[in-house]
Image 1: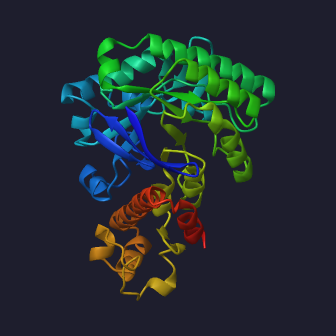
Image 2 (image 1 turned 90 degrees about the horizontal axis):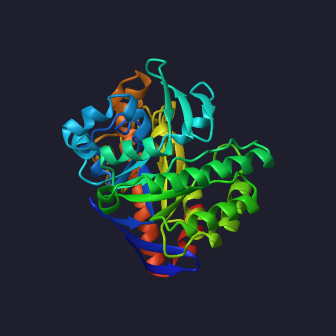
Length: 363
């Protein structure tokens, strides 16, 4: 169930109630593709105030396999993660041409990146895997066209996405429907009429929430936001809106102002592994020489584990000698920073001050 608590000129603050607790929205989900957020333990992840995360169900199906995870009890038990988990279908991997073998009405044929074996992922198989994993929110199998796909291909892609959404919903068991929410994924490239058709037809099927896929994959940011703005009115107001793959601070705030409730991205963690530290006053590269003897935290007043215990100079040293601990500490800080941004955004919306907060942050 999703409940909107307050709106401020389009921006919304709410709660998404899952089997593993309520998620305050707007919310940001770190990406735990193979069952972990790179370099962090589940305990460290929880300390960043992360409420939920997203994993890739198809990659987990390939390795370690559904049987291993079900023998552990569930994906939550396997990962020792007591909070909410979203599972993606694996359809996004269609953008990886070395991974994709073909697409048909039946589903998507993939080559395993682990052993080269071939697999057909159908909507029914997709639901079977996600039900077995026991995630709180499952995503339908969708056809994600690349940014430069032409209009005819995108229309054909949408037909598959809609058909697969119907099949995903129809294959659900009663048990899964009670314990696990199911989100559709709106596609349509950058073509407003196709996006509108996708949103409206999926709305008729009454899913628990609506993901927005196929954006932030190479198109100019101006185009992304124009597409998003035109699409929002076609998504049911009372349902959670989930923009997939967006995670930079400025893009998060802009999207929240348009009415987006949930986000996921590898942005803060991937950038941490490339030495980028995110703060309220901007980002910087911690490996620069000027930080080698700077014995202050990564960010003044930050309360994350890294900033409370270690200096810039130490983390600079770790990264320059390729010690994994350096990447872990910057990852902890970046996730804490993003989660704190979401907390402050929720507070600003509840106080009818979001526009001022957004503009102040940008300045």
